[in-house]
Picture 1: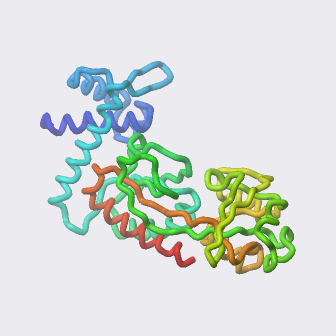
Picture 2: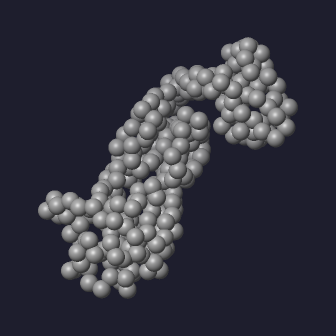
Picture 3: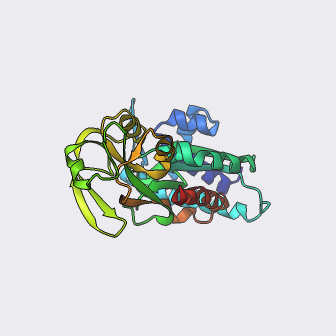
Length: 300
């Protein structure tokens, strides 16, 4: 093996250990023995002249030098991947694409489109992680993060993919007559609050551009959209939920659109990735597929 390829192997092992937080887990991913993975890390540290990861019996943690080296290591590996892609068949996608997506969107709305696309590229592996929490994309090692709203990290490239319309919905037993209800009367009705999108104050806008804020009496608070939907179906309280998620419930009469002439602010679905990922053909192809799937949200 040449020295240049050997260096890439060392960097690959370091990055995977940093991402997995475990030498044994990284070794398993890479098809190495734990001893080999540990030697790779030690050799890289010797060549760089700095300790990158502090090892104890029970845990690993990146040192300050490790954090600094991690982004550079990823950039070097991504640069190598981009170079080799230039000489591959134009329509061939291979390797592993790591995606983080919201739980509901990823589980219900996007998964079929992604799996159908993957079936067209048998040499492409997909690591599909569903997570609604705020993350540091650089630390996860993921190629792209599909999220609701704008990220706080201004280093990321952000592409807006869709607008999600949100309705105030409830079980029919909770609201006597949705055609005549005044929005402010909801302040005396229990609410199901989905964090971090809904808190004590819910902004609403009417079809004729009147805006108001209602105070929610939260009976049930959760950070999981499926729990919020289930509680709403059980009649625990009204909730602000995306139209695409509740459209069938409304159609079947299991939920009602409590305020047909009012809407909560729409949410933007974005695709976020680091500048170092921009050259990946697999990422660019995925973004096209994802944006096509997400565009349907606007019409739900």
